[in-house]
Image (cartoon, rainbow, N blue to C red; front, side, top):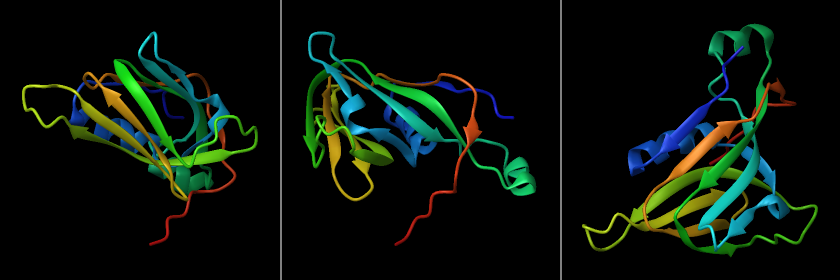
Length: 150
C-alpha cells in the first residue's frame, strides 16, 4: 500500500511534480473554494494514485484513488473558463498544472494554469508559487485506469 502524500511547491519545478501527482484527479466544480481575503484557492479532489507501486497495480489489477486537497496560497485573482461552480453535477478531470512567470524576471509572481479534460481551466494570478497537495486518508479501489487519447 502506498503512503499518503504531502507535497509543497515553491517553484516551477516543484509545481511539475505536484502536477504529475494530480493528473486525472476528479472533482466537482462546486467544491472549488476561493477566498480573495485570504488569497487562497482550495480544491478537494479524488486523486488517481499514479504513485501506487506498479508491481502491486499489475499483480492485483487494482488502481487506487485518494481523497486529497490541492491548496494554493498568495493568490491575487482567479479566473475560470468553462466552469460553473454553481452546478451541483459538473465534474471536472484535472489534466495538468503549469506556471507562466511574470514578464519581469525579478518578479516571483505569474500565472498558474489548471487544465481540465474536455476543455476549460482555472487561471490563478499569484504573487509567487506556493502550492500544497495533501492526501487526507486511505485509498480506495478505482473503477478503472484513466485513458488518454491523442
